[in-house]
Length: 105
Image 1 (cartoon, helix red, strand yellow):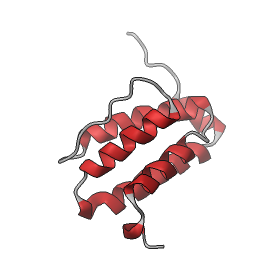
Image 2: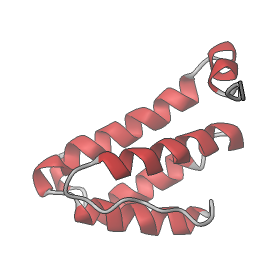
Image 3: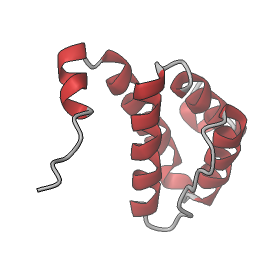
Image 4: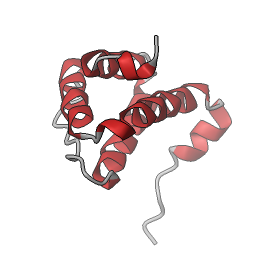
């Protein structure tokens, strides 16, 4: 199926289900990225997550995807799935480097 034919509801469901298949620490970092990324996309509403509930994330994703210009929707969908794959496939050593807290100096 062509990505342009995928309904927004299905896109949101796909992204949420794949994200919530990540282990908790990788999920947390993906969701932080998602919130940051959504705030930088011109012409869209920023995603704000009050909880890390899968259904809430799916609803927020759906609303955010609906706010995107149609010509960028397919690109964003592929980007989100690619980001999830990146977090999933990140080797443990590199992942540990991603999670080191910043110095307070």
